[in-house]
Length: 233
Image (cartoon, rainbow, N blue to C red; front, top):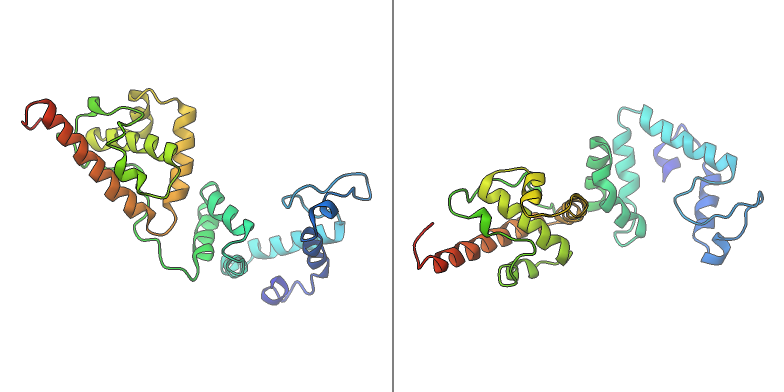
């Protein structure tokens, strides 16, 4: 496909041969190379200098072309939706530049339906004055988490992220401040942020998560009313 889209590059038989070699059974891919090194993963550049040069030529051609992002989108959209590369693209999009992220989002979802509303960062303070931040804990009470368990998401990270967001919904503070108030370590905060942000980019997940969060908030508010004998707090 690269030679078809980048006509100035010409044939890229060396890259084709490299890709075919990567598709061989695992023992062949891990055999020693001519210089004694071992090809272990798909992430290494080609050992063949000609293939590496051709790959760099394609990279430079895309970067130098003002419309190169369209070319890259065509190339990425040709990947099967179930391929390992496709899954990795969706997972790592958040770490790329804004332009690359936009290309990945467009290509890995084509021709699937749009994802709908984007993930909310930061979480709006929709329940300020109604939801008591001091009543929120991490982990969440089991009966609070019922709406979250209906979602196909990483359970532990989702519950942690939901607790953080509930504090934000109640106070309008930052994620870091919310995590601090819940005594969530920064490493756990980072893990939840990365996992849930990637999950929310899948179609319909962001909207479903917001709906579940509001249901959790209503459960928390109902609990508070019960504890105070039915009066609003």
